[in-house]
Length: 452
Image 1 (cartoon, rainbow, N blue to C red):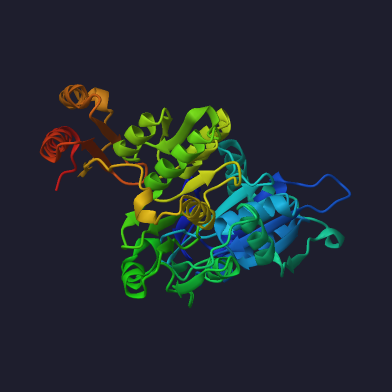
Image 2 (image 1 turned 60 degrees about the vertical axis):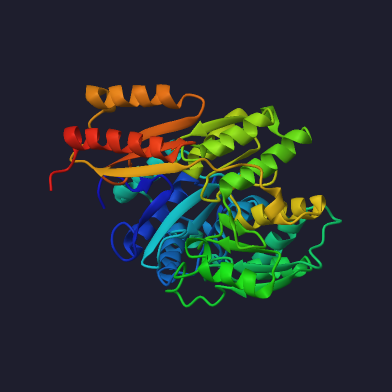
């Protein structure tokens, strides 16, 4: 299993290969149950949800078995969006939540991530405790025969989630008269997504709602929105909603089939909340990958953009630390902390549609930012040599930052999962930023590049 199970967002890998095996899932279940061990007198309860991958059945059963063996009960809710599990964990007063999903990845991959009873992803310290127990499974004492936990399926989980989502909108809001195309990526939202829009009164054209265990994210959803865009144009729909496999992020498409990503959402709703005096500390939190155009758009409205490292857990940590209420990623993972503890693609879509109806304007006319040209170069490296240890590279970076000051942005970093250095440059003049990216990439290649 290697020396490290948890990555930036739970445990990930190829199904039926370590660490995504039934054996490791069982040990993860036992470790999780031990960490959330009950004081005597009451069984604890852990809630498990999943997306539509074939391997979800195997992992769900193994996790439940491990949890029950420790004297903890299990609530099974079946295929449900990741944010639904975060909500249900809080709503049903469970002691922890588990999601079995690999988000936007193909069906061969899967993952296991955990939520605390408050609906937040676990902190590093708790993950480290779980990981240590997985590798030292023999230390765990199983429950005696009369205290083994029970597993039960929760039949009203979708209804609870639907009611909560609709309650995030003003009671006056109705989607009557709107034609909406929604692509659920043959994933976790395949049922709840169309049902939600239908209950709000929209005319719904549903795509990607026929999961077979192996077609999640395949030529559909947020990863492949071509069919959705064509359907918008053919049907005359007012907008389109493209979800990923676990529905924690969304891409929106206007009536012309043009994309609005997470940066667009944060620009539009960040400025709206600020104008209404509801944006805490007049701050939006985004990652280093968000476009410089977002920073400009927010700054023009007196809003500060606070950047974090890549990944929604980093965004959520910063939001909790500073008590901010809007943040997210360019990829469409947007967190509205006034409503939810994690990104929710359906919630994001609802709030954007509500704003569209409030303004009585089509989505295409609500754009609030002009995207700045961006160049991204990837350089394969033999080792992650510190940038300060390569004087030529450091000199080029310093010079580029001086040239881009106020008009662009430069980011040079090593990938956390690949032996790759990433050079990202943004600015108004494409020729200038392309030249900067090439120059820095070539220098990295000379000093640390992988030998062919």
